[in-house]
Image (cartoon, rainbow, N blue to C red; front, side, top):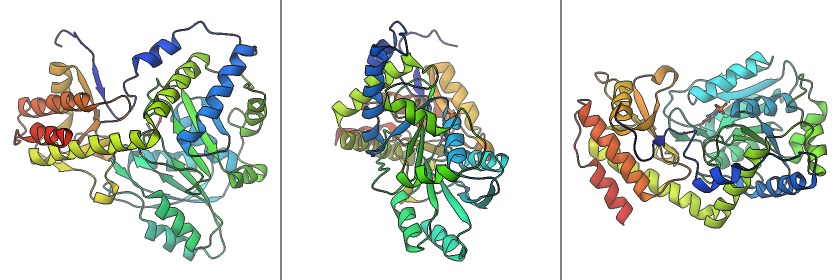
Length: 387
Ligand SMILES: *Cc1c(COP(=O)(O)O)cnc(C)c1O
């Protein structure tokens, strides 16, 4: 391992680099979570987080990983034996399916090739065939972090509406929220699942559920067992600016600062920045002569790019060389993509020169690993950034 001077480059698609101001905001004494100072903090974050989800309605914040927020979405809205429709877009969609089955739900799992998002035409077809309205929820991973493919949620919503089907729409935005355009209310999503350590630029530890009126009504009759995840006591305590248990106070300080950074930049600018950096990354990958895993240009992810290597090269070896030589972490191939791809995270606290440094490290690492590339990739990205 080379001596580590300068900053580590944490270019995995979550956890992401945490801005200094967020780290400083968290470095405060922990306060009484039943006192007036906490109530002020709670009001700031509970109202401030809504625009990031594109909702005017309450958002539940858990001390949890994203996986916890997945579970919360299911147990608050569904009952044992309910049927749900899910799509094999990649590793995370498969894990969420496994969780749903483990909780006693019956999952119709539409197979996929791990190179594209959810096909809205298949949503339409499956719902049209479900004349008895047995499907209680459609589960979609907005940005599949294992593949770098982003599903087109508005088109999925339109497919549900066209089928005139009463299903709930549950969407995982864990690696898209705060990076890729997303609108909970406008797109008619019922539960939006997210967490802190990706586009929100925070350490791991906060999970989120944005909840539609329809989802809240469904929660009244939902019979899956729940206690910690139950929305009702949390929403009730939140109305008084408190939590029904000890909240993660210092992470909430960080959240308040992260929300103010996003607000200052403006969400449309945040999304445009991510789109631009993703475009520059793809320009580099193609100029190197390598392949972007996502096979549909309408679904290229703006928060990460998965790069596919030929069978003769081990992507984990490339990642090891880059970590060892340049102190940069890249995302591994997950599940059946192990060793076949590496993933470049370009989300969160990120600017043109962070991307230039990242791609310089990737280019040198590919060369040092013996992967034959055309070394004009970095230059191709710089041209996009300069334009
Ligand atoms: C990271 C991630 C998860 C899992 O989140 P944890 O905080 O690790 O539980 C789930 N879904 C997607 C799309 C992710 O990117």
